[in-house]
Structure formats: C-alpha cells, structure tokens
Length: 161
Image 1: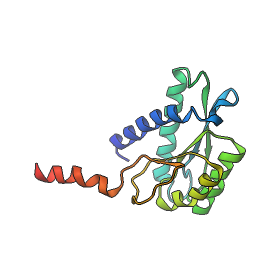
Image 2 (image 1 turned 135 degrees about the vertical axis):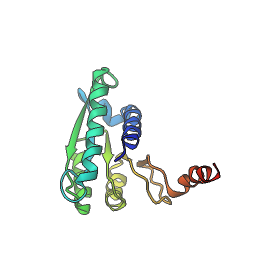
Image 3 (image 1 turned 90 degrees about the vertical axis):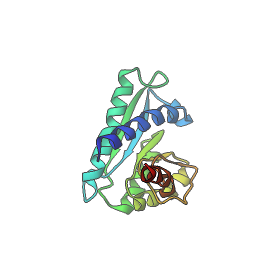
C-alpha cells in the first residue's frame, strides 16, 4: 500500500472514530470499544495487516489526546483469516459479544457483502476503507473509498493537462 493511501486511510479513520463514538453503544462503560475486522492470516493478510496497524495507531494517538468523550478507546481485533463466511461470524462476535460501538474492516467486496446482513440485523456501523464497485448504498456502512465514477473526473483532468 502506498504511503499516501495509508495516510489518507489513517486520517479518515481518525475523523470517523470521533463521529462514531457518539453512538448510544459508545456511552456504556469506561471505554469505547472499536472493532477491527481485517485478515491477519491467509491470502489477504499481506494487504489487511497494514490496515489493522493504521487503526491501532489512530486509536493510540487518540488515546494520547485523552480519548473521546472522556473515555479511552479500546481496540478489539479479530482475524477472519481471509475466509469470507468467517467475516460474517466475526462481525457478529464483535457486535453481539464484544459490544463494539463501530467496526473498521473488510478489504474485499466479497468480505463486505458477507457482513452486510449482520450489520443490518444488529444495526451496527461498518467503515469500509476501500474503493468499491458503486451502486450499493447501505445505511449501516460508510464507504470511505471512491466508486469508479468518482475517479473519472481526476483522470480526465490529468489527460487534459
């Protein structure tokens, strides 16, 4: 992953952590739990481990600033092991068992699509950090990457130059 992409992902993560922390779930307890749903093993680990590290770095930096709403952020990291059905199982674990306020995760479209029914059913919040196909809108998912049609304008500007 390029450093610029990593930095943008980190900045987006930091900003979204702040907005997500105001949810009703985030108000309970002494900490605000943040789910991290990226493959740490299997074929996708080479790409997703870095994303996990970015989320952990942002949580660490936010905690150094005093946390959010007077509470420390606590990462709850799970490994769906590049297994698409396991993504849904781990998402359910994060939302039901761990009671996270928000989840940052998924790297592929198939992993995102496997967790969508879980986030809908349990009314959880997923921040999806990658470009995606577009033509999908789900009230429980923040698509932080661009859809293909959002890349057309910058590409055409570069051609004109």
